[in-house]
Image (cartoon, rainbow, N blue to C red; front, top):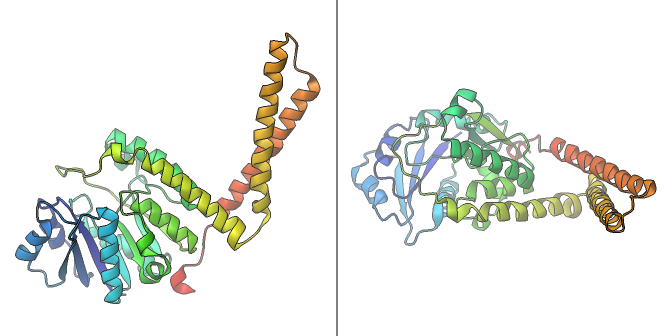
Length: 314
């Protein structure tokens, strides 16, 4: 299979040439997408890189990391590349791992593979503490919104994707912000693509992150919630019906009713100086127990219903 690398280029002039030099011969094409970089990183590559595999694409206006990656994906599809690996230009991702990251896709086990920095405890504790906490929260949100319960580290940008998966999703609908990787997982789940994690180690040196926490602290929870609602609707009510399609609304209804009824009767009795009756407590508890059981059953079904056969083998 032919492999290409996409490098979104924005304020990475200090590292990008070394990243390109470290890319091995297994890679056929290298697409450097200059996302209207104020430091001229694309021009730097064009002037100084001697690698004949390199093609620099320039954006007239900044489109965000997602927009840059999509441009690279489209170029790879046009060149009929089989597997596209995304590597950042800031030196955090070791190009020597390209074959390792792409292996599940190249060997036909997955449509999309991504790095996972959380697999090793030693690597985990070497990460900045704020990244550990933030990624733990984002991992849970991503599992819910994408339905890929077996993956962790959803914002990891070291990824590989098969051309059939790229052709199946609507690239122009992908978020162009730092929510790109999480949104891509959601889009892949909609087309029943197989996703796999690959253990890796990141390098934290003198690179400067362009990610601003204040810009994503509200976007990520909101986007994950919207994608969760879309996924549930598409999977359980539009595309197919199953027992889980009934378990979710009934379970939610019983849980909400049980909690509301129990609290309402408790405060009503307390304000009147009376004890809540046994019948009221029993009804509230029964509704809560049944509701939670149905929700857990739905969750179990959702976990077990991840795609098993890659699109490239269908």
